[in-house]
Structures are given as C-alpha cells and as structure tokens.
Length: 271
Length: 313
Image (cartoon, rainbow over all chains, first blue to last red; front, top):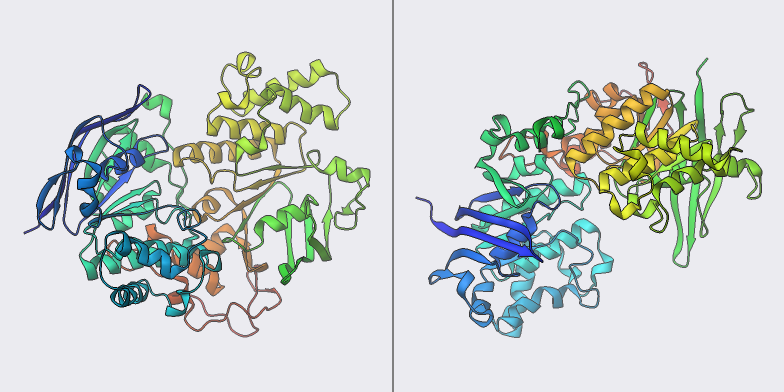
C-alpha cells in the first residue's frame, strides 16, 4: 500500500500577465520518482518552485503530508512553512553557483541543521560525517572549500546538504544536466541508492529524456505551461499519445549510427 | 592518396600558470578528410576545444603551442603549416573566418547585440572578399534563406535579440558559411539548445554539408550527436587522442576502454531500474592515464593502447 505524499490541484502562475503554468494537477506517492520534462520555457521549473513555495502560485492548492499529517502549503504563511521545509529539499542544477564559495564543506552541510536548531555541535558533526559518507565522499573534505572540488563532487555536496535534514521530498531541478556523462552516471546511481536507503520521493525536473526514462517511474510532459501528457514512463516513451510528446521523442539523437535521426516537423504537427 | 584538409601531428599545448604547467594537449594527431564530418568527442578538460582553438590559432597566453604542426591544404592554394605562421602573416587573416570558420556554443555571445543580423553576415563577406556592399547584402540574404530563416527581407534588418536561440544559431551558421570556408569548425553548437531545436540544427548542418560538400570538424560531448552526424570520430581524454575510427567502428565496436566507458554511461542504453555502468565499473583495472602512442589496427583505425592483443567487449 503506497502512501500519498503530495497533491497538487489546479495551480496556475502568471508573470506580468504571461501564464507560466496553467491549471496543473497531479499527485505523488511516497518513494516514487516523478519526472517533469519539457523544453525551456515550458514551465517545469516554475511548477517545481510553486510546489516548494519558493514562489507563490496564483491559484490552486498544494497539499503535502508531513510527519504530523497533511498541510495546505498554498495557504500557509512563510513562518508556518519553516518547520515543513526540513521535509522538502531541493538539489540545484549548477554545482558551481549553488554552493557558497566562502563556506567550508563542514559549514555548508551543518548550516541547515543550525537553521532548524537541530542537535548539539557534536551531534551535528556526526550527522555531517554520516551524510558525507552516504554521498561517498571522504571526511577530509570537511575543511575544504567548494573550489577544491570537481563538478561531480560539488553535486555530491549539494545532495548531502539537501539530505542532511532527512527530507521526504527532494526536488531535483536539472540536478545532473551540467555534468559530464561519466560523472552523470555516478550521480544517477547515487540518487537511486539514496532513494532506496532513505525512502526518498523525487520530483525530477529535467530536459534530458534518456535520463528521465532511466530514473523516473512516471512523467509529466509539459508544453507552454500545461501538462500535455502524463503516465508511467515506459508507456509514455513507447506509446506516446500526444503529438508534442512524439515530437520531443523523435528529436533525441540515438547513439546508434544505424538509427537515423528523423525529427517530426513542428509546423506539420501544428505545434 | 588520402585527401585531407587538415593533418595534425604531435600537437602539444601548455598553459604556464603560477602553480605549474598544465599540459592541455599532448601528442595530438589526426587527419580531417575533405568533404567529411569528423567529430571530436570528449568530456570537459579533454582538450577538444583547445584543439579547435589551435586550428584557428586562438590560443592566448599563458597558453602556448609548444610543438607539433597543423598542415592545412585549401583547394587551389599551397598547403601550409598553421602552427608556424607568424602573428602578422596575412594568411592568418584569410584563415580566420575565411578559409576556416567557426560556430560556437552560445549564439548570443557570437553575435553582436548592436548590429542587425544582415550587417553581421554581410560583414563576414566584406572582410574577406572585394565585393560591393550591395552584393554582400544580396549574398547574405541568400545564405540566410539557405539556413532556413523565414521572411528574410524583413528579418535581415532585425537585431539578434529578436531571434530565438535556434534562429540565432542559424544566423551564426550563415555567417560561418557565407565565405564558403574550406573547413567549418562547430564547437558544441547545439549544447545550449532544446532537444527539438538541436534536431533541427543537426539536420540543417548535415544537409548543408551534403549540398556544399564542405568539411566539418564537429566538437561535442554527446555521443548521440556524434552517431547522427559524423563520418569519422576522434575520442579525446586528458589532452590526448585515445581512439580514431569510423563512426560505426568507434560507436558499435569500441576498442579503447575509455570509449567503452563513455558509451556504457549513457542512460538510454541501460535497463530501467538497473544501475548505470560508470567509468570506474567499465574500466576496472584498465589504465587510461599512462600515455601510449596511437597505433594502427588491422581494420584501419587507431588506438592509444599498450602493444599486445586488444580486448574487445
């Protein structure tokens, strides 16, 4: 029996009169990975941010089941949201700009615990060491600054920072897009291992369809602020029902030279 | 008799910094056959862009080409070594943007925001050929039409900010091709674009290359793009060339363990729910750090591995 973790109902958000997302509804079960795919400007990041209340949706409801029951995120004040933020965390795309260059790894990883007033100095140190180990980094990294690490290692630090509060929901916004393919594979494996170990639920925002196909259980395909297709990932990939999904899938260049690229024509499809 | 536009031999580039010397390229050597698409594929730091910049002689201090030659054979002209050209040599001006032109990753940075696109495409012609301004604009319009810009008479007088990312990249390609270069270098030209726009640009580059029969050196990290576009593939890692072969050889039957690792790490090829192969899991105890000179295999391709039987997957 799977448990619901998140219910989104009819949310919309406009910026200066331009609809960024329009009437979006979906739900998310615990321990599931939901992919949100679409091209730039399709509204996928706006959707992710509306859910976390990093920006406020204009209308619609977002309900999240925390440790102590359901919470209407859309209707809560910023200060009411603070305790819930422990349970919803984000991993960002750019491992260079998402870590403060003036803080050591120890300070970066400890900061969320300090903000939420969790533990003593000694217990926090232990938590930092534990999470560092889980993202497969050495403890001697703690005294070093972000610039001393490669892109992949920085992304591990970003993941550790998101996970140190033991969240239920982790929103990964293009979390592997900036990485080289060999590093990307390591980070994808790490995200999958951590999901199993810690029972995490992922909202995985990405434009790379092959990554999404590998990691997600279900996907939402977004186009111009709307969800045009949703379903189990294999079903959407093998039997897309909407023209826009077909267009998107036909544009992926196969690494097999005998499978020629034959992209569908946007104009012909009327998109 | 092989007909190569470029023959690169033993190329080395060093960056001398306060903390020591970085060897950006070591013993890089490969040919770029005329009328074909050669792809250089590699991850960040592999030296693929540095190689392209050497061909255009764009390496700036503290970087320096410390050895090697790049023999360039434009049609109807004496071949010459690009590396040995003096900075003031007039052939360098012909080379940059004339005989060899380049398309970069970010089209907004490649275009000037304060000139119309027509002005910028025509300027490329006026820099390299003695034609009237009117003639240059007419040729610019033809080229813009050719790269798929609609309503050219109106669009030619617009500024880059009025174009989408994909359309801007088309303008940059028009700028690059308008002087009919011997060699077109594309450095990750579709990396900043959405996948559907990428597909359009790849299709455009491929069809233009077939129509104009020009030579393309295509730099990318994306093996999907390589598979769809390249005739020949050069795999680079850590400033060295590890494997050279036809696209089918390299992608369907890779010899070097690093190439196999790159292919294995693509998520699309693994079963869902299975762990992805990583470089470490594919390489095992294989050593890719120790440099070995390229050696020719029986099927014509070259690989940088220690002598002995090659293990294949």
